[in-house]
Image (tube, rainbow, N blue to C red; front, side, top):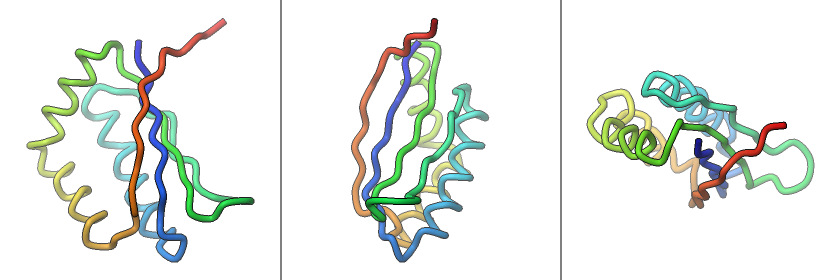
Length: 101
């Protein structure tokens, strides 16, 4: 199992756009075989930092998701939305191995 942790630097003035982007990706990750654990938006503290977590059964399954997402019309539209609204300034991706009980 592998969990992907995304750290976003967002435009705090475009939080509603980023929220819409995140809601769409939760659905898309789940549609393409992952388990999305949610987006975490600023509440207190830094107003330009957000996070997301989602899990796949393996790194190979994640790579299949990435391949599928690159040609899926809904995924392409979500990427285009982020580009058009410029709600994301940059992001970092980390791969983690979860530990449960």
